[in-house]
Image (cartoon, rainbow, N blue to C red; front, top):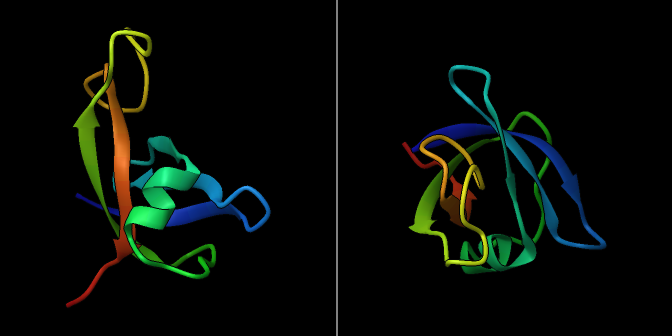
Length: 78
C-alpha cells in the first residue's frame, strides 16, 4: 500500500504516514528497521505493509481494518 511520510522521529525511529485518503497510520521502530531506511523526510512517498496484530494489540489498532499493524516502511519505487 502506498502512503506519504507525515512524521518521523530519528531518536525513536518511529512516526506516521498518511494514506492516500488522508488517514494517519503510525509505525514503530521495527517497521522502520524492516524497510532498511536510514532517514525519512515528511512528504516522501513510501510503501507500507501490514501484519496481523497479536492478541495483545487486539481491537482498533494500527490502521484500516483494525487489528493490523504496520510491519514495513520503505521508499516507494516507480
